[in-house]
Amino acid sequence: MMAFWSYMRTFGLFLLLWLVNLGGRGAVVAYSSQNATALAFTSCLSGNGIENVTFKSSSSSSNYYTLLEFSLQNLRYAEESVPKPYALIVPESRDQLHKSVQCSIQHGWQIVMRSGGHSYEGLSSTSQAPNFVIIDVMKLERVEVDMKSKTAWVESGATLGQLYSAIANKTSLYGFPAGVCPTVGVGGTLSGGGLGLLARKYGVSADHVIDALLVDANGKLVDRKGMGEDVFWALRGGGGGSWGVVVAWQIRLVKVPPVITVFNVNRTGNDNVTELVERWQSVEPFAPEDLYIRVFVFGGSPVSLTFNGMYLGPLPQLLKLVNEIFPEMGLVAADCNETDWIGSVISTAVANGYSADLLNRYLATKRYFKNKSDYVKSAISSSGLQGAWKIMEEKPDSQMILAPFGGVMNRIPSTRIPFPHRAGYLYEIQYVLNWEDASEDAESVAWMRKLYEYMTHYVSKSPRGAYVNYIDLDLGHASANGTSTVQQAKSWGEKYFGVNFFRLVHVKTKFDPNKIFKNAQSIPPLSQS
Image 1 (cartoon, rainbow, N blue to C red):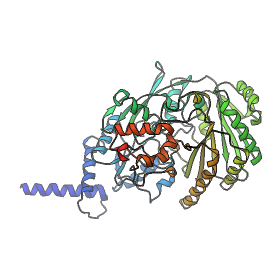
Image 2 (image 1 turned 180 degrees about the horizontal axis):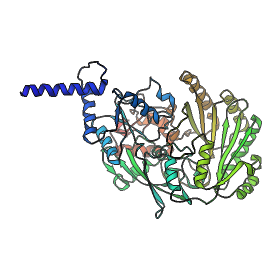
Image 3 (image 1 turned 180 degrees about the vertical axis):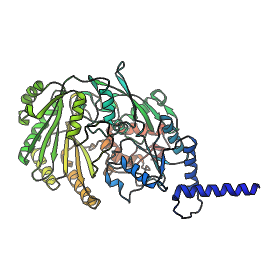
Image 4 (image 1 turned 45 degrees about the vertical axis):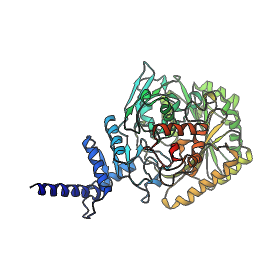
């Protein structure tokens, strides 16, 4: 009888592996240690009550791909050749998230965390690691606003649109400084800094994080006190994927006026665009911090320009100010709209092609794209701008987005949090190129690199700066995922974090020396060097 039950246990183990890994396709595989690891991992999830899991090779594989692509925003990383996760886990509670991370650590699965899925290089949806899983926190989207303390707790799976809506449901006199894209996840935004239209008034999003709940490299759930000030410093702008899994963030709200004016001004023609950008460089970074004017330059022949922004005050004050300091912009009342803070959020989102429904986390228009970033410390010459426009004439779907600094950004120390780009920077540039078909990948990426190379002479140097939330693997990355030495990681780390890079390395060395949390551009510990 004992021999019979031993046989049945062996048969049952084989059968379960076959069902999990082959989805009933009729193939037979040899029992292996990898299968044993997969079985132990799935048993750990099941034993902790985590049932919202979809496997790549299963009878529900169609659901797997639907879920995988729901929050995958760059179609370059949906292509068949791109590695796919063994499983997609969608925790339904904080406890399930905690247990999912523990099971992954315990059984050696690399964790790819996904909030909104907007990683420019697909790091929230894929990995080069042989065994990886995605933990998608889209169901952890609760936002609790406390107007008594003027703070909010927001779970990492919430989008910016959900955060903004929750604040607006409580008050019209407070907001939060973050980006204009409502489908972007809060977790990713705060991990990299967070730039938006309130940056000149209040700094980056991560400047306003005051606590966090983190699952660390030991699988423990800790708050700010439990993780210590070094890790808490690193979390706020030190890049996602290096420090653990943030379950929720506590943020400080910022005061906004009852009336805000938003505007869009369109111009065209190479010569006119060049003159306007030249003038904008000398005005906007030094303007009062209540005024935010960013510039969109669109490719094509000729290039065209849109001024988009907002003023923290009523329309008459905006017109008076702009006509005094920047009359060349040609702003008139018909270009403007008076609203409140949440109205300005919706208006700006719609102007950028997003839905007016801030609670809708699905991005309907998805494309193939390659983006890069730069920072500018000295105004770019007329000839320098004209050279960029000439390259952009080749690609009607290209853009350069110029986002102004100055204001309070000049007064926040570059070491307060890992985001270093503060005093002395005039503006940030985001380069954008979209295309419609995978067959255009190689040529499109090569074109973007050509434009970026051209701009080398005109942007920050030693190091040339970059924004980690616009992550760019061209700056260097691990050939085997997450295995870079400190010396190798300098190629991107100093561009993103400046003088803060080596402090981040020391934090990593102390709190995650075995690189439990890693990706292609994560911070390495000194032990890897």
